[in-house]
Length: 298
Image (cartoon, rainbow, N blue to C red; front, side, top):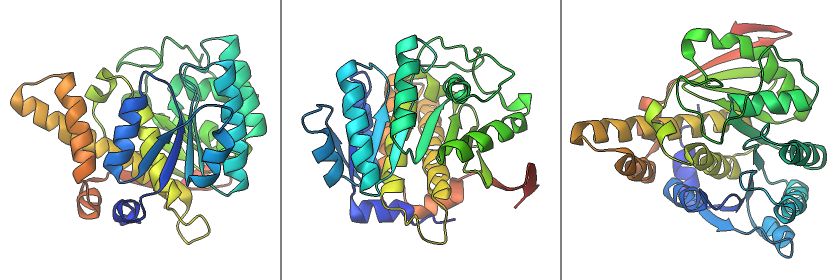
C-alpha cells in the first residue's frame, strides 16, 4: 500500500475545487486543509469551468442542490475530466426527490466520475437509477444515517452481498464506488476493499461523509493514475485515514468525557497531524481480487 500518499499531499498541496453545500462547506474546507491540500469553493456558472481548469481535483456534493448549482457541476465536471483531473461525486439524498434523481442522472450521463461515494441508501439509489436490480429499498430519510437505523451498514449482516452490486456499478460507470457505513466498502471492478477504520460517533456530526469527500479529492489529486498502484487504493487509504482519525478522536473525547463538538475538532486535529507511519500502523484494509463473478483472497 502506498502510505506515503499522506506526505505527498502535504508536499504537493493540490488545489481541490469543491461545489458542495453550505451546511458542511466550512468543515470540508478545513478537512482538506488538515489533509495538506488547498480548498477552493466556487459554484457560480460564470467561473466553474475556469476554476476546474486550474484545480487538481473536483468534488461535487449534491446537498442543497439548486438548478444553478447543477449547471455549474456539469460545466466544472466536464472541464475537470477534459483536463484529466479526478471528479468525486457525492449523491447526497439521491432518493429524496425527483429533482435529485433527475440531477444525478444528468451528472452521471454527462460527467465521467472518478469516484462515487455515498451511504448505503445513496449508492442503492444510484444503482437503481442506472438500471441495476437491488433487493433492498433505497430509503432516504436525510443526509445523515445514524448507526442502527434503516439504511445503515451493519457488519453483522454480511456485507459480501454488496460485492456484486458495487462491482457492477463500478464497471458500468468507470468510477470507484465507495459505500460508507460502520464498515466502508470500495470497489473498482477488479477488487473490493473493506475498510474497518472509523467509529459510530462520526455519524453524530454533520458532514463527516462530506469531509471524507474532501480527503478523497486530496489523495486522488496527487495519485498517479497511470502507475502501478490503482486509484482505488488511494481512495481506500483516504477512507482509512479519515476513519482512523475518527477512532483517535473518539478515544480522546471518551477519556475527557466530552461530546460531539469536541469530537469534530479532534477529528480535524488528528487529520492535520497524521503521517504515513501512523496510517500504516492503524489502517485496517482488507483487499479481495475479483475473478469473473467470484471474490478471491488477494
